[in-house]
Length: 240
Image (cartoon, rainbow, N blue to C red):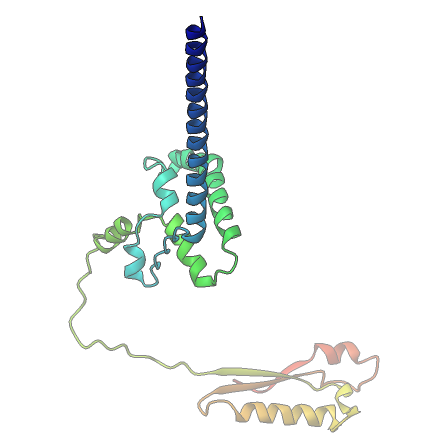
């Protein structure tokens, strides 16, 4: 009987020890995994991944023509829609407004919020890198190879000169010669100043100009009774 008691106690001790060891191993495994995760996080903080540098965008015609397609254009823009014209172009507009534009705005907003100190050149590089069409080259080559089909007409033989016939200048001056021109103003009477202005003007004309002087309001006595006659009187005192 004592033998069975001792055997039972030894068996119970072995089972208890086995359970304890198993628990320690499981706990140790959990702790080991936690340590590894912490180490990974620390390494990530100490060695952050370097952000890819945005490539320089084209600034000359040649560089712009050969500019590759932007990342957003390549990823989201449907090739069968880009470049459509006429009624088919409405499919492009619908897709752009409903799908492409919201995706692009979200991507650009996220980038610019995390890159607030960009200069104008860096912004330009980024926008071209993301939104560049990449389609310029094919259209540029079409323009270069365009054949208009126009045939230059045959021109008459002879010197390539055109005779320019200079036309003479014809000037007509109309002067108020009514009684009101006797009124004195700053610089003299109105008539005196008018004659001076006409003389200055005529002296600036080309020598071969044709000129004529017409006057009105010079007839009658200047009375109210002769007003209508005076206003209707127009006379060429120096014909053209």
